[in-house]
Image (tube, rainbow, N blue to C red; front, side):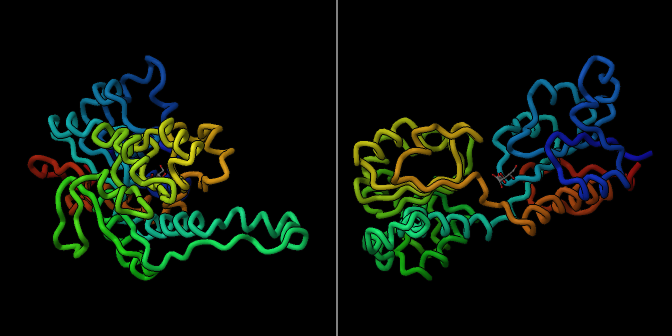
Amino acid sequence: MKPTILILNDFSAPHRESLAQCFTVLGRDDIAGPAAEEGLYRIRAVVTDSGAGLSRDLLARLPALEIVTCSSAGYESVDVDALSKRGIAMTNASEALLDDVADTAMLLLLASWRSLVAAHRHVESGDWGRLGEFPLQRSLRGKRLGIVGMGRIGQHLIGRARAFGLEPAYFNRTERPEVGVPFQPDLTDLAAWADILLVIVAGGEGTRGMIDERVIRALGPTGTLVNVSRGSVVDEPALIAALRDGGLGAAALDVFRNEPHPDPALTSLPNVTLLPHMGSATVETRSAMAQIVLDNLDAHFGGGTLRSVVVEPPNRRQHARFS
Ligand code: 8YV
């Protein structure tokens, strides 16, 4: 008998079809309503992502659950402690998106620093011919980049930053001497030192609001904040106030508190560059992220080795292949 799995997110159709060859696949609609209760008892794996999550209530109704596979890097909407306690394994897809998210961070950084969007409008509107040259911008060479979060994406940023002549330093929960970049244990001090503060920490309660008013004001009137992590990490009202009153020079944001409806202040300020949460949004990377889910389900039910493990099963269970 095929194991039953539940897909909670908008998993791509081709990958969903691949899963259907080996598994009985249920979706959100299949578990709605009291008649679905029996199906819940059969679910051995959940596929989800940071947006769809896995609620505590649903988790409690899945007694046969063995593994949660996230097709995203983020998993702040899944209760990892509850999974650990129940001996349920969990994987994510972080290893697939390191390059694209680091590229997106540089894209935002460059676009904001050199005013790409305003320069584009200058040409598009005819202002170039009517009013003349676009104002000179500041060079990136020799500027200081404070990286907030020295996980794997943070590490992928170091080489990119140096290629553009930036001088990197970082803040992290713990020092990572192996990365060969100066560590700054005080986030506000890092912001005061930096010309650009680039945020790439995990979301969730541990990082909520860590880019607060003090940090934003320390970055200062000529500073730029780049956020490619989660909207929750930044105190958005404090950010908007500082962008309005000149306390912060500019912000370049891929993520927002309220997605996909960012605060209208952010969409109307001239010193803000915006992307619609597309750090990992390339065909290749999204496909690789989905493939990790397929590989991990295959490994879990076939007795193989899991990739991108967030929660190890306490003792690797013995699974008869697709039993
Ligand atoms: C995507 C992300 O938005 O992986 C993450 O944690 O934030 C992004 O790559 C996400 O995968 C879509 O659910």
